[in-house]
Image 1 (cartoon, helix red, strand yellow):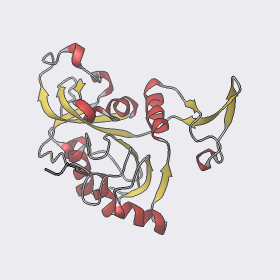
Image 2 (cartoon, rainbow, N blue to C red):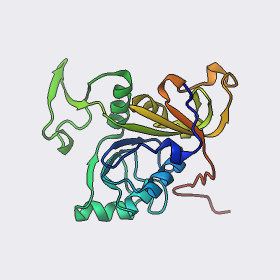
Image 3 (cartoon, rainbow, N blue to C red):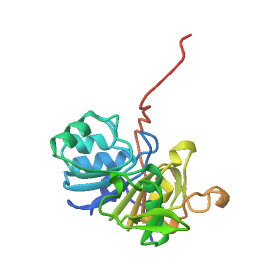
Image 4 (cartoon, rainbow, N blue to C red):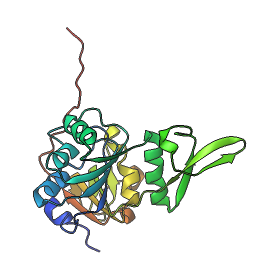
Length: 231
């Protein structure tokens, strides 16, 4: 199978309005910038996005929010995006806020083929409203369903033509678990190399999980909040 595509536009060409997308990254670190920009240009809308955060006003998923292409956000942290806040408070945007560990584990469950997980996080709070709970060894747990995403969009440092991926430092974050979980996984990489050039011991995501891969360009790698000491 030839997994290499020319660019982001080709990679996302069959993403349609109304689909559910997993989007890797944490803050602005390790986000699939090229895929997000291509979705903005394509104009698909009514999207449900599963992501740890919602970008900032003028970058990352914030661009899709600005252009009103997102119907629902499923996230853990959204505090850096004023447009997100405005849309949520006005009722324009559906929002499901969930504990970060639950978000990560629901991604992993989808990758492993588990239908549900049980977690103590959220028991007795608004998060648990309308959901089933069970007791294990005297402790109450909340049942959460594995995510069901049409596509997973991830960003890696290096990849090869077979789809094997290597992530760098904290940019690893949610990307490996989301890469396993999408029905179709699209990976954009900073450097694309021929199969066999990556050390097998250094591969974080095996190519079996990746359906399309391309070398991205013009990565900004912004810092969401820069804090430095005074000289």
